[in-house]
Image (cartoon, rainbow, N blue to C red):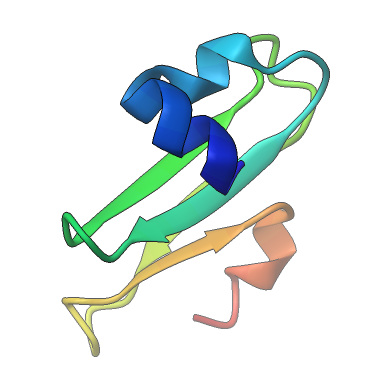
Length: 68
């Protein structure tokens, strides 16, 4: 995936085929890149916690975010 981002930039997921979900941290631009397949075969959840407002959590199953 990192090689795809180097070649295609933020449009890299357009060139992927199949089911996927991922989160990458781009240190050079200080940004998070998150994507999943267009059909949504792979679940992808994002959550927050009021105790740590600057934190963002990602999971492939909702039950993983429940304790947060």
